[in-house]
Image (tube, rainbow, N blue to C red; front, side, top):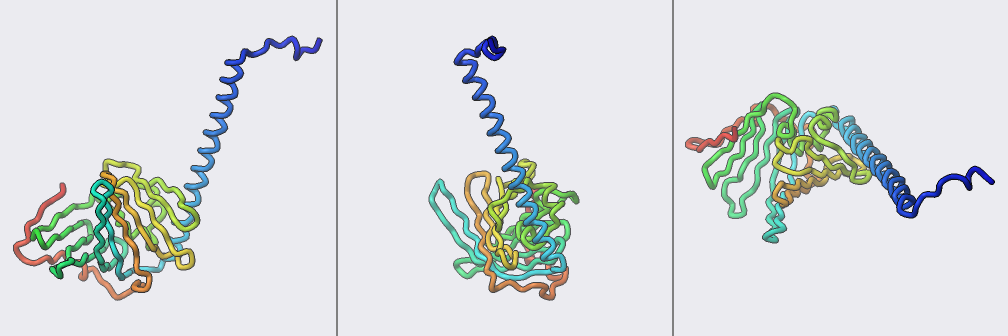
Amino acid sequence: MSGFLNEPRLKGNETSMMIFRQTALAAIFCICAATAFSQDQGVALLQKMESQFQNLKSVAGTFSQTRTDPTFKTKVTVPARFELLKPNYFRAEFQDAQGQKPSVQLISKQMFYHYVPKLNQVTTYKFQGESNVRDLNYLLLGFGAKTDEITKVYSVSSLGANGVRLTPRSQKEASFQYITMEVNPQTLSPTRFTMRQTDGTDLIVVMDPGSLQMNPSLSPSDFEPDFGKGVHQVSMQ
């Protein structure tokens, strides 16, 4: 008789378990391969953007920012204008619906400022001098931030050929779950950012491509934290 016929036969449940294990291992392999491919695609897009904007020193333009709250089913959109000077100067002014003074988000040297005129208050945060998620402004991510610096603090995955998802490696340092960024396939300029907050709300920034000025004349003196006299300061540290 054939040696195969003399082999002990597996019981039905043992055969099922073997098939299950083989299927599970194959699924895990496929998932890992897909994840690695997605990460490679995402990193490749960031590298293209870094190369595209390597000679870019400054940017100015406008965008709209929308905050959506699924719990209360609310949506608030605010227009804003921004100025960015590499490597670490940024200013955005958010227009008030009643025509009052705009609120301001400012990064100047190693400090972050959030000025709210209605409260006559400015909140400050001092960067720690090391790469972390707070040090990388989301708009700077879209204009040629160094890929190796991004990957130090974010896990990168692809959203097709023209988008990436950036998930903070350390959630303790972040006030959000992840950022998605979509870019124009021809110019590689960012067109849309979505920041998913820890409470489930979304902060969506839609760029106005026609407003973008590349390399406008800006200097560090344009980013001085001058919010007027008598403003109450609150430190985040």
